[in-house]
Image (cartoon, rainbow, N blue to C red; front, top):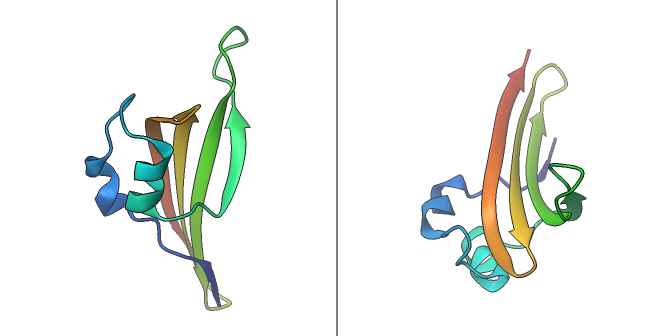
Length: 87
């Protein structure tokens, strides 16, 4: 069983913090599986988070990959990605 699509982490180098537009992010990474928000400090403005995830499971093991892309209005501001395999 699987759902989602593997995040295209190999395309992150094409993006520039503060310069790449939302259209450029979508072209490089594809459409996100979901959208959310994040606020890093109480007095900082909330920004948008795009997330990409992929899960595979055979019923005994699961493999999980998630890419979070931080956006400020229409500009790419950075990313974090995670990958884990559970036995």
